[in-house]
Image 1 (cartoon, rainbow, N blue to C red):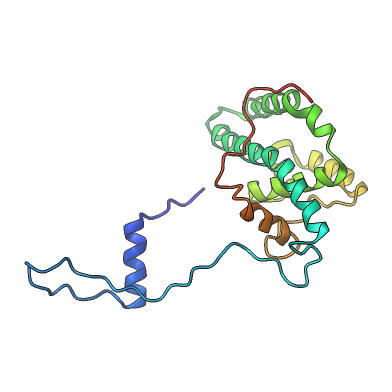
Image 2: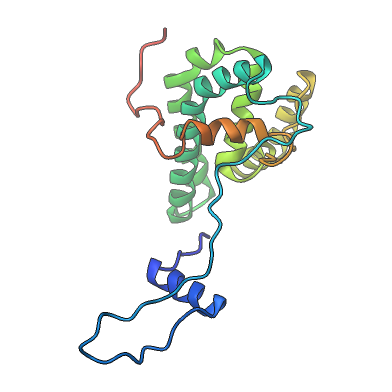
Amino acid sequence: MRLRLPSCWTVLLVFCLKTGSLLAWDLPCDSLPPLIQLGEAQVTGGPSVPQDHPCQPGSRRYSRLERRVLKVWPYAAYAGHVMDTLEAELPLLPDTRARKAAIQQREDALKAQFEGELRRMTLREGILLIRLIDRQAHRTTFGVVQELKGRLSAFMWQGLARLFGHNLKSEYDPTGQDAAIEHIIHAHGLESRSHALQAEPRPNR
């Protein structure tokens, strides 16, 4: 359940009260509008890559990762949108059978639409896509599969992923292991731009 964010006015007022910089409004009625003096605020840029991270901006390794992120991001963004929509729809369905049918229907539609494109991805691109889906879902792929398809399916896919050197239970780490990925996402403004794939099926290339 997502928390509703407070309005900008509430945020501003709380900030003033916390910093103790809200001035007394005791100016004459015919004077200029009262001023609110804010304390100093630090404006920080996007996320940085730790110095000991093996994938530093400007390196060839970073450039290769950047190309892969730009390629697979639209699929991850679309997957996140589908999961959000499904999460909202499932509680409204009457029973488990209806929920399973809805999940299967969405799965079949995604398979028909993107299976050809996903099969042409390299192993590294596929693993990166899983990491980005973890990011968009705010939980591990293992957790997503277990929630939607059951524990047995989750263990089956975990075993398959292990054969290719990946762990579906590992969490997305934006300040550690996945810091370079996070840096690329923010550097290109991927979240603020519309990069989700269109709903209509596209011809396989």
